[in-house]
Amino acid sequence: MKTNLTIICLFLIGVFYNSCKKGPGEGGRASINGKVYSVNYNATMTTPQDSGYLGGEKVYILYGDEIAVGDDQDSNHDGSFEFLYLRKGKYKVYTFTKTTPNHLDTAVVQEVEITDNKQKLMLPDFRIKTNKN
Image (cartoon, one colour):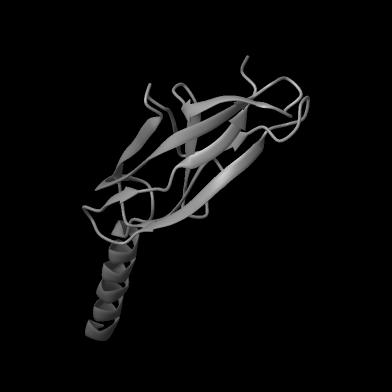
């Protein structure tokens, strides 16, 4: 009887411990930030018009292996964005770029890993093409 009780207790402790383990996502102290840099093309996507850091561009984040968007941010006037309160784990951050006129935009993805609880991870600039004339 005592052996069965010990086994049940150890099992419950194992279940409780594993259920408390948290993977990638919100709830931590780490952050990911970066900037969106755009080259603006004419309507046929053949001639660059101007370039610079782009505000108002949607940037998305996926937590771990999830396929649904975890969160999104609009880039600020200076092209910057930041995802706050993240836990350790792997993330995919992406935005969209135009490749040809009248076609679907293409995702530009950066895969990163947060390895420290208070890490502030700075991504290289997202370089995209637009035709927002």
